[in-house]
Length: 200
Image (cartoon, rainbow, N blue to C red; front, side):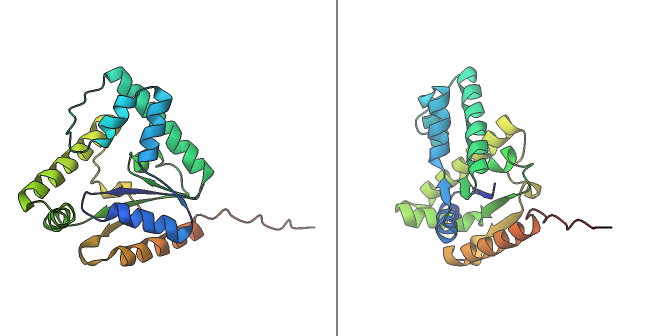
């Protein structure tokens, strides 16, 4: 089940890198699709909206029962997609859900706060103050999500096989690093060939 999970900070270029990696490897990419499919299976479309709402602009508060059903759905969808293989899974705690799968590589994309704010301000054409508010809210939401539902700190580097800081990297350069690491990961965890049977 060759698969890559990518966790990223807002403004780190993580989403663009995930897409570039998928394109380079010819893999499928799953991001919002995981949320939508999990919510559809759980029959909780409002949870999908809440999960997509990193900035809490909609003010949605799904019930505990709805959240439980949704998170069961996320786990099932993640496991199924990883089992199919050749996929890049973005977000949704893939680094935790698939942590025991040796042939899945977990990647974290980060960047300094000031640079992330600068990128968001330029991309969305908003003031630095507005960009800072978005980035800090997104960080808090993602941190709370992993702590509340998976009891981990999303900044814990032991959750990841590779952490890429895009401070001095373009999307293309980061993609090359990740693809090279993936090639080495695959070599390391390739199934062992059957040893020849020794005849007496």
